[in-house]
Length: 191
Image 1 (cartoon, rainbow, N blue to C red):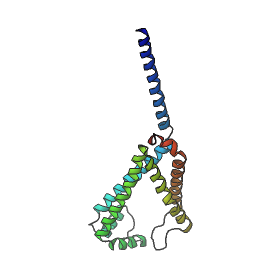
Image 2 (tube, rainbow, N blue to C red):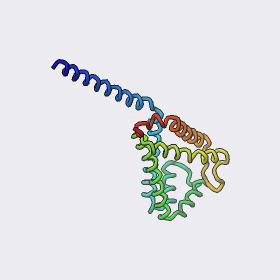
Image 3 (cartoon, rainbow, N blue to C red):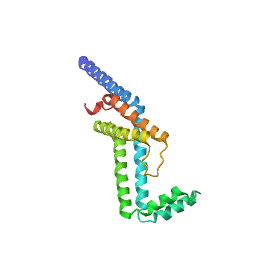
Image 4 (spheres, rainbow, N blue to C red):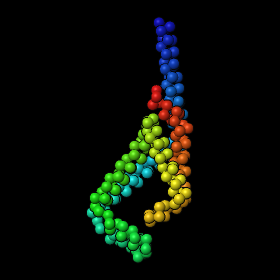
């Protein structure tokens, strides 16, 4: 009777130590991934910003866009008669409602990619890690091209090189970090 009681205590102690070891391994893995959490925050914020942009574009689809721009410029106390704003108003006037709705839909779909990446990285889904790596890698040559050649002459945008360098650095960091740590970060998906 005493032997079976001792075996029961030994079994309980062994199970407790196994639970402690498994818990420590999981906590250690999650605790040592602050860069992953930063990437998750970036992806989720990017997704939410693009969802808000898609909703804003959709709500403006049936409005008089040049008049809306003129009103916003007056509220912000910008000079709506400057050449840049006049050219932008002219281009907005050429947009049809269908084109604006397509832009809203495309923006919404793009935002879903970032939201899926953020949530998938939180859950440490292996294929989401690869999707994030490939998406970030896709933009690196575009940003390098933009830095070397500048924006196309027919576009009215003047992207500041510092902004492009920051975005390029973030994408390179995401690719490097996820490639280097993919085994450690997504190990549980294989088990």
